[in-house]
Image (cartoon, rainbow, N blue to C red; front, top):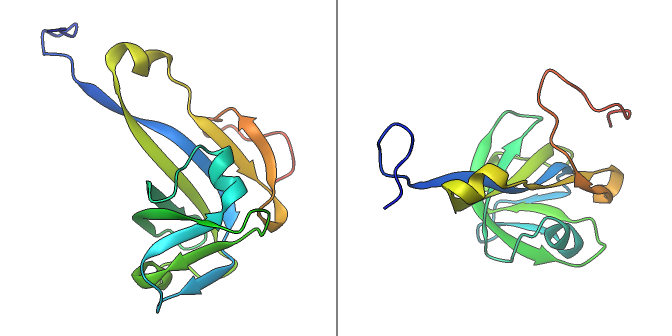
Length: 143
């Protein structure tokens, strides 16, 4: 059994796997069964599978939720918040969609998440971005 530097058995760490940054919500349907429908190209770019758990952080409203992803039509730009989650997001809201993975200590130390920056009409602006820690800002103009 591996032991960490403080003598505690080494476990697994929950690490950011992928992130879609600044997706604009296109639809919110409270009467639909719960999920988050995203353009299949966005899912592919961020390595998110249909029915995978996603965290949705609403930049506009400050709300957070967990649900699962569903694939929408490729190149449609769709970002539809469904079911009860539709009370927490409305069309026009900017959201961050994130997934996590469990890694052992060695893998966690060298892990780099997949960061996808999303631009107008939910088109991929950068599919291989580096995370920028605050209070730093990206050099390019904010949307």
